[in-house]
Length: 268
Image (cartoon, rainbow, N blue to C red; front, side, top):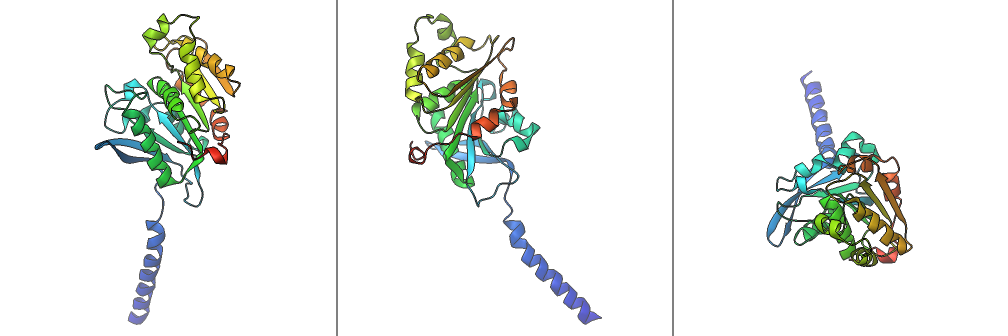
């Protein structure tokens, strides 16, 4: 009886040892804490990894830029709005890596060093989770919408598609004072981004924070280049147009359907 018991225990130990490597290799999924160092400063960011993530293939990867209200250094509050909210409502809609950096207080996505923080967070996550350089996307809301236009302008050809939400090119006060006949800032931004980058623009028709004319004028400027441009304006909706935008049934499908040609995927 003792011999049988010892053998049984030995078998159980061997099974446990054999199973341990498989358990140890199980990939982390969901919202994960990460950091990136830029100019000797450490910045926290989050990465969403789908439940079925596997290192055996490359994955589409989305860079999301939050708005001014989520600025800080806790690395968490930026996941309480926008695309992260949509992910939590239905993870299955987002079969992609989603990178969610955080802008520091009194800083701006459209300026250094936060542009570098966003891009280096994207690069780090792409390397760790096998992000596909040909299927890399950019979206943001409010201040992040401004950042989306600015980063797309600074890195033309880097993204397979962009989706700015209630953002713009000119700061709100300047935008309100801008002559309806002066389209130079919008034409310049559109030209820098180029006609090869598909764009889907969203804005609330009653936005009293960022003038809806910013998105309307960028829509016209991008359309003038002859590229693929979609514009969705929500009548009667104020500044928060992002909940509706990220809930659009075709949004994720459209975004992830875009891909850079092989020769363009290495552009910086």
